Image (cartoon, rainbow, N blue to C red; front, side):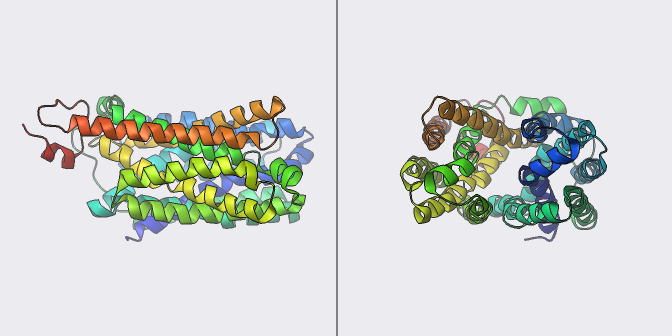
Length: 402
């Protein structure tokens, strides 16, 4: 694997850290600015909305420059946002810094996925994408716990200063290690938009929303579930999230490895197993050991879907994949927001803290159904005499009689 992937992974590590570390520092930030915890929660919501809207916006703005230069500009935006967060004299400016940093998130992973796939042979593309996303998963194991510890011990501003420094390292790595690959000839914004008309691209994005939404339905409410139902102490939640992060790392690498060999079977297995494990979590949440094991499995199975789904979007948006790739990153955040809202609804309805697990199981099962639909449509479209609609990967075109 090229060293350029290491530079992308470092950038991903910084982005993953800044996205999630705020959750552990909300009390400190709220206390410093004299706002309530729910108000401080806007720092999480604002970031998520920035990712959703920033992914297509920044990708469109970057269509006229090389991908390497755009990645460097995005890391510069990330650094500026985190520095503003670290130095903000008011809550409003802190929120502005979070939004500025979030604008880089979706486009970085979207463009980075395209660059990572272009750096390697066709049969290693999913593995390369997975290696870049390893930075994001490792952030949940190392960056977030350490950032929380530093923020609680020295001050939350110091944490965001360190994250900005990580951005500088990522920027330097991209500038030094990522080759300046030329843009595809003749590809314009209209081609990027046309790729979104491909049914397979839209189905892959829908699977992303539902599949990873299933994960966050359970994980969003893991703290009250583990403390009120399982009986863990409040201080144990951090280490349970570390277990979740370890599962994410393993699942991401396994998903990348096997998606290059059998992409759709990998999706069937991971989504099906995820639905079952989430349903069982309503039972295993009553046992400390079983709950800990289940949390690892949810992280592993959830992130095992990421490389194959990202690669599937790239395959079916062939020739103009950048916008579709970035939008698929936004789809993750849409799934997170949707599932968190649905999980809150069932808890608010008095169904208990384990009820979001059933929501997650239904979402993951729905994603599995879409995977079967996607495969069935693909088999139909590749039958002799069928007219293919939308951008088609080169390898598929060669298989279709003219």
